[in-house]
Length: 258
Ligand SMILES: [Zn+2]
Ligand SMILES: [Zn+2]
Image 1 (cartoon, rainbow, N blue to C red):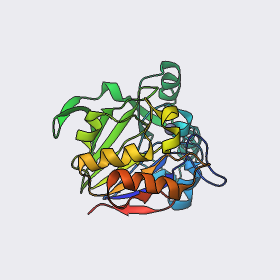
Image 2: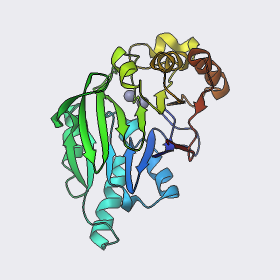
Image 3: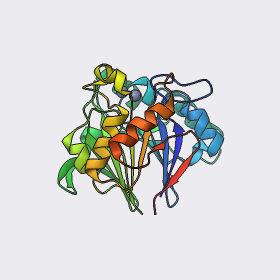
Image 4: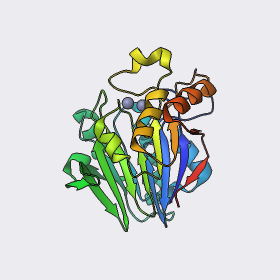
């Protein structure tokens, strides 16, 4: 399994950068987690958008879904001109806020949409309830997060176990969910000085590190950065929380789960 960062900024990108977007490849299956502003262009620099099997939107804030509109036009165009795309892309998204969710689900030429809340609910190890969806041998588990909108963390079980926090305040369930993670990609929206600003819907870098340490994850990558931050300062605070080295998500970088 390999994870490539398409965008790491929030809620707006640095010049030339992109907001939340991550490509997960396992075997020949390409699935994109989130498509924030700029992530479609990032994706096109790395591979052919026609080969995407599914897109999972963790929640419907623009820094996580704005470029689904680009994907929509690209897919519709490729179906029209017959350029190596056989059918719509599977789109998993939350059913709320209803107005946005319904509009996206109505883009039926480009997407086969499934509301995450309609997926089967299963107990996933070590005993948390998550919505599950499979593509071939790879299972995608969606755990409710704690955010200002309905939001999900994503666990990908394939040739390894990868967890992406989405946007969330720390929760006990996320800590359990991340427990087996070979790689934990966790939002780190704040420095210590902004902990009041992010509380209840996000994590500081230090909190991301502390949660990852309690979960015992094998590798921690932090992401979802305010563009004005000094990322080395953020790395130091995450490392103090985690107690070991922390990777800073960087656009175009790929991480491997063995
Ligand atoms: Zn958000
Ligand atoms: Zn966000």
